[in-house]
Length: 440
Image 1: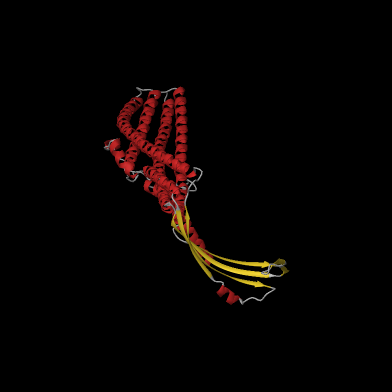
Image 2: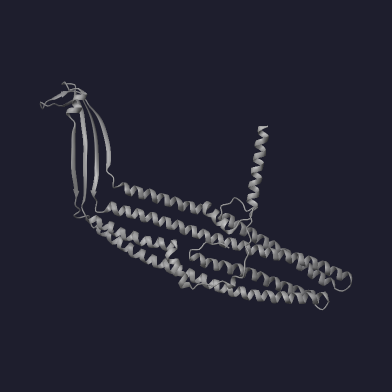
């Protein structure tokens, strides 16, 4: 009975999982899942954890060190005695020690090391957020491609259905003696071509689904589908100027933040390199005792010797660099060059971001224009097709003219579909640069 209950529970869970997999995914669902499961992001997350450990280690350099030691020595054979003569004897010695070292001043190396560790952590966090942004954009691109390929598959399937129905009509006309065998053969060829187009469209859709599921780290695209959003007229969306978008993006985009942190990191690196010219000071102290025996003479007891030999010490250690074979000077110059390089990198990142925004803006403008034009073109092609279809039914147009009009309409419809989703995506991408969420 217990086995039956367990089997039923497993069956229910598997069915629920299957149903969950078949549920359509929205763009927000895809982005959220990718951010949680993408392997590249997990690696970037580990880098952040590593930088946290490094920062903790840098902070630990402020703390005093503490070490304990113990030794046991045995000596036997001939040796020099206190009387300056040699004799055979066995001696043992046991010692214990406890010492500490406290850094007082290290040329600001510890403080600067902590600053560098903190900046490294901030840079790794910014890089992680940049990787998350890249995943968001990649998922949105793949999502739009699926929407486009789905619509093309619908158009191709409708074309096959239409051409198959038309072939039956042509065969009926052949039986009535109204058309020739050549027209039947031509329609058969058209139907075969339509079926090939449907196969190609279905294959393109499967590839698009595979690319998105791979971004999501799903094991298989089987059963995966997406939500088709309600899309209004994207050509009516007002677009901000590239300059206005850049003014907002440069303040929030993680790529710029990471480059800006890099400049701060290089500046602290200069301060740290200058610290090599400064003296260092540390405080040390310790405790110690020992126990000694000699086979040729009597010794006090272990406890008495440990008490009598107990010692303490404290000291200051000062190190002043005088000549370091120009290594400190070379490190300082290298740090200064690195600072200049990081400044150039920051400007380069800003320019790259501005170019991306400009490109996205003009892509959006072009997409809106193509959408408006394709809408008119699709409407004109549809009207032309309907008129040609009426003529074909009345016997005033041949099947070739009819197919040409039909194909022109389908081509215009496909271009209109592509322009609609591209227009939507480009407008949303501009909003994304301003810090808004990518969603349809």
